[in-house]
Image (cartoon, rainbow, N blue to C red; front, top):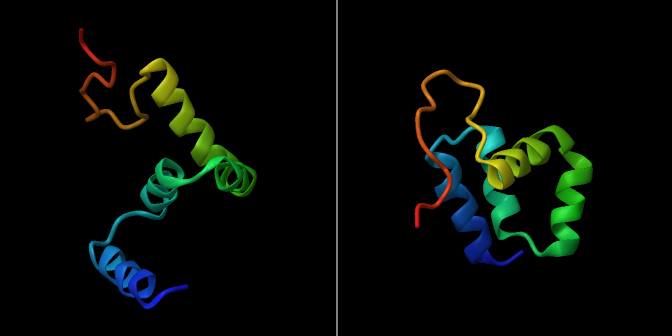
Length: 72
């Protein structure tokens, strides 16, 4: 771990994101081997992320009123 990574982790955690949001954000940045590790460790979170990404399904919360599919 670099000092930059350590400082950045403190900065991100100060924003108070949920654990699920942190795992999903990590998945967006992960390379293929690390994505697989995330999926093995947190299958429910990653499967939900994949479902939303690939199908555009709305999130479970009722206030999620947006379209994730690109228009074009």
